[in-house]
Length: 214
Image 1 (cartoon, rainbow, N blue to C red):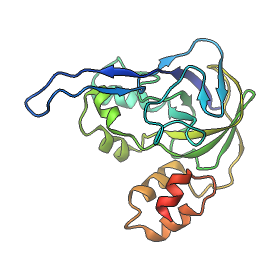
Image 2: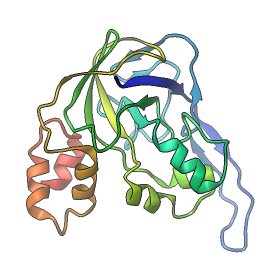
Image 3: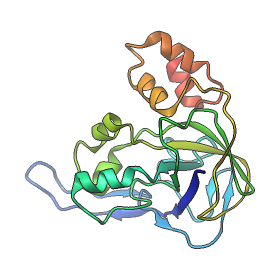
C-alpha cells in the first residue's frame, strides 16, 4: 500500500550566491527549501498550513496546492550525486510518497489520505530554482530524462495530514494519462500535436496547461 513517508513545508528564503567567472552574483528568493513537519498539519484548498510559494503564477494555489514526489527516487539521486545528504523535501515536495511514481500516477487520479481527498492535476515542471538550490546546472534536463519530476495535487476535501498515512486510490478516470506520458506530450507538444490535443481535452489537467495545449 502506498503511504506518505514524510510531509514538508517551507517559507521563502533568500540565497546570496557568490559571483563566479561565468556568472555575476545574483540573489534569489524561493520557498523550495522544505523541512519535515512533525505531527499533524492542515491540508486546505490552497495547500498546507505553514507552507508558502514565492511565484504564485507557477506554484501553489488550488491547482497546485500540494506537490507529491516518489520516495523511491532518492536512492537514485544520492547514488548519482555521491551524497547521503539528500532526502525528503530535497526536491521541494510537500508529500514524499512510497509505492507511487510517475509511471503509476495518472492525471485525474483521486486519492484518500486519512480524511483528506486529493486529485492529481498534472506533472511538475522543475524550474531553475531546483538547479540553483542544489548548485547543479543541467538538473532540469536530468529530471526530464529520468522522469523523476513529481506531480501536483488539488485538495478536494480538506483535513488533517500526517506522515504514515496510507494513500488509497479511489478513482482513475484517465488511465491513459500517466504523469510520465503527460509530461512528455506537454514538453514535445509541437511535434506531438495529435496527442497534445487529446491531453488538452482531459478536464482534470492543469487549466493553464490545457490552454497552452489547445
